[in-house]
Image (cartoon, rainbow, N blue to C red; front, top):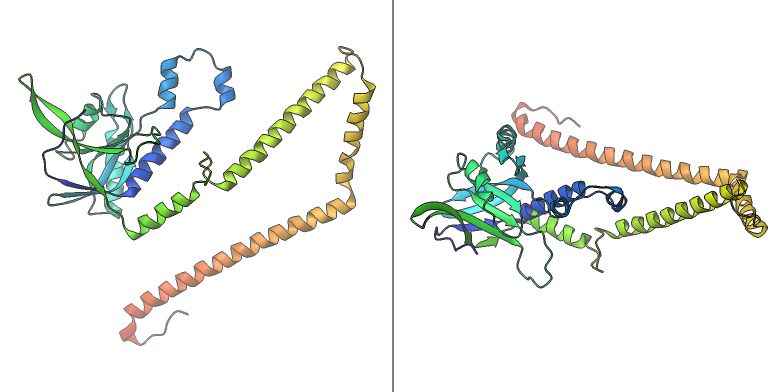
Length: 317
């Protein structure tokens, strides 16, 4: 376990950073883990590769401000870092830093983040690579493993200190304490994300996702049963299996129901409902455009009146 920090700095962490890291990890994990059917048909994968896919590590920078002895971490962005070669894409980092400077001129790169259960020795490579931007970067580590018994946030902030170990000065990671700092916009966002979680503790993000998952499972089961029935009838036609007249009568009865959906009454009702849906969608788009236009006109009139109040000219609309 890493020792505690002695710098005396006060760290404030905003929830947006935690949400960004969690989102980054979830996206990478989803991209690296193919569906179960693909995994089952694959060959030559070993346990080490599977472990890397199940627990990928993501990397990024944290930005914010430092006022005296208080360090406040507001936001973060992703980094392109190859842990196998320990290379950092400097051009991508500089471009992202330049873009953030245009929007948030007061924000500076305070350090970096990653995911894992604990700081590793290899983490010091990327830590040292950022020292030319910040001489004392911070390291925010998010543990994505689920621990229901844990009450604290799975986030640890490390500083780097120079310690003499066995007569050799070495740079090591040390723990530091932090507090969660929020603004009104972040509180609204976090509250919205919290309400997206289903009450039953399932893995679906919303009830709609759970509903669509159920529909997908039902369609998948229907497709598999139709395929089995088709293969059975094809084998019966080729005389590979004996003919079953009772089953053929049931299949024929089922197929005779399908033309009923092609009746004129069905087509009229379907087209009427389809057109109604298109009309409602069209009206919603017109309402949205009108609202945006009114908002733009109000802003234009406000700016126009402020700049030309002395000229005696009237408003735009």
